[in-house]
Image (cartoon, rainbow, N blue to C red):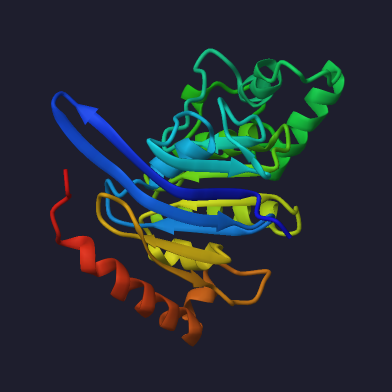
Length: 263
């Protein structure tokens, strides 16, 4: 099967005043249709830049990015993007926030009644039934993340991009939302690309884990995680194989943890 997403010799440079910041250098990789790919690496290694390129929010300086066999030019309407901040609109209820993608997706001709049914489906999936008419200020941080996830899933995108969506949450809530994410994704046939700093989270969720080097970001290793599915995100970390994956990935990651960034 052809990959759904391809990065072909991609490099990216940003400018801050007169300073050149090399975010990515010669990155080439493929993302398989229907897989859950996790990307880990030091801060500033270009993880979020890869997601922005996949979403069509920026262009590579060198190289090309392809989605479903076609070069990405402009915003990629086939993906949904869950950023680190929830970005819920404070003047809209949970239901109205979840319905927002239908308003932004200009080609959507789904009748209003069907839109509301779809929104309710994903509000239920993420465990927010009963909070449809609440505003973001009335929700906890975890509930806001759930609402953001429902909003990203509601128009059933082919690919979901997630940039450290659970990074600011406490450990217990992270486990709950990781489990909800897996339950939603497993069996869906959707592709999910998940950026995280947490190796345990990456191994628990992913089919494959990419470890990036310090800036300029390059791929150090790609590890296939052959742990059985469906997965229990709590108990899976006590498997001996889990520890072996962690040791190998950490051995690669720690080489860059104390190095200065190349700017």
